Length: 398
Image 1 (cartoon, helix red, strand yellow):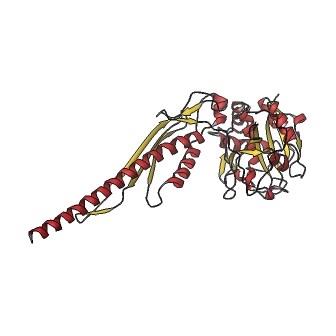
Image 2 (cartoon, rainbow, N blue to C red; image 1 turned 90 degrees about the vertical axis):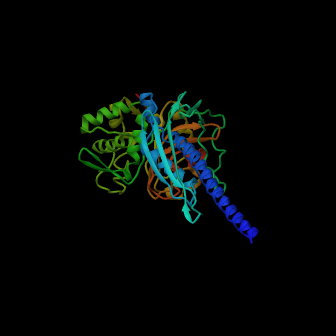
Image 3 (spheres, rainbow, N blue to C red; image 1 turned 120 degrees about the horizontal axis):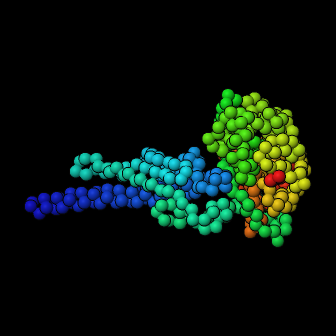
């Protein structure tokens, strides 16, 4: 009988030890996973949120706070455990200099120990400052956070999908890389922005956004803001608000339809009031810029194309190219091109060329259209640029 009790208590003690070990293992593995997940995602999100337009204008690193939130939450949702509930707190986020504080709370698995339900709270916090030892626009060197973990600046990936391939052999293979500018992050969303009493619907602002990006890439962002303050009595706080004010100014110059009308007919759509190449001077002259008519061509919503070589030559001349995809071909664009498939015309900013992958650096601001639409910076194959862009407007210094 005594030996039986000893056996019973040894079994109970063994089960107890196993449960405690499982609890500790759950806590340790979850805590370690959460820490490195937060650390790596924070660093990647800060790099993704760098505002290159601000850097080019002021020579200082700055990140876009809203983009950091968006990228961090998206990356975390993709990698985090589906069986765990997380509470994410952004304790401090500063745009310039880029500094973030992120606190993520969760719980370990639940176990029964001596009749009681037991779990541990798991809290991890990461504070980071983004620094750059070199020019982040040139892409040479590395960016790093305060924990001295380097992050390589990688070239833009070519979005080729072998299920729907685009020929990459077009154009002259002897071309050299053109990397004069960095992208300016301006999001074209379905939000409205009040510009000194004028309601601006940003969902149809691709043309003004592209023009604003070109102006800022060329280092004339301060001149644009001064003109906005002078003509509209409005002080923009970020690049997107600057684009909204540019929309109002371009409407006053006859380049766009009414930004408050939400009339997306052909007469109002983006450049529908007139050709940017011929009328853009009235808007760009204020900032010491001009439309390089010798390196511009095509028309909005036409079917003519074949401009890739001319766009390349314009970039080599030091210009930024504002280019449009026609509504007549927009709905048939393959997903592997890096361009958005839309039923309407759409403006992009082309600011570089990657000779290694034979593709153009193209910025697409649209964020609201349809799931899977390529947004932000894309490296669009030479043949795709040659096939789908029906208008190109070269913007450069006077």
